[in-house]
Length: 256
Image (cartoon, rainbow, N blue to C red):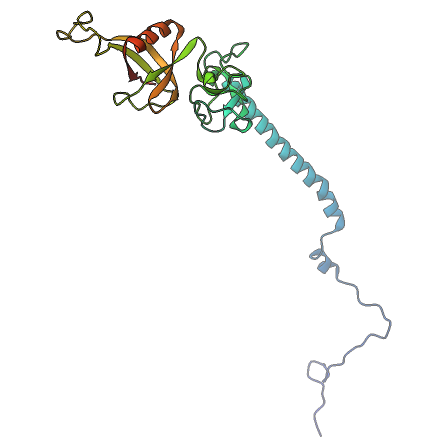
């Protein structure tokens, strides 16, 4: 006869399986398991306002730091002024169009001399539509003295105030020049003239023709194939015109 399914420990074989009757309630989850499961809703709701408060405080501190830094920078530079700054290089003769400059706040201490005065006459109040007399580099404040008077057009716009433009012949002795550069003009007697009366300056040999300077730092407003148009001062105009008629005018390029 086969041995009894019971063991020494009292367990039966095979083990009995208990099945809950249909419709019976499921056993409740252990409270210990719930403690390690989903976080209670009350805790999450309590952390929401705290998190928003922390974010608001941090944002406020950052904004205060930015404002404080900007204030310290402004105090370091002092008073600023809105000026016209070139967005590209402007050559003599160019018309300052709308996209050739922009308005930027610059500290007065870095502006050209006179820009910090009450009227700020050293910088152009509105350079739009005006003609450039002298080169203006990109990023540079546009000075009023480098612009032609408002309304001036063509070659006349390149002639600075209190100056007149005269055509000076150019030849192989004339150095290569460009519009906007400055030159000195010298007079020498014409080869066809009598040199006997114009001789022997200091250090010159017997019979050597004398030269004299007619104009200083005269800006070039036009370069042609056989002549240069030079703007000389009103006081120099008569002497230059007479030298052009009576003799030869030598052009000498000067340093910027």
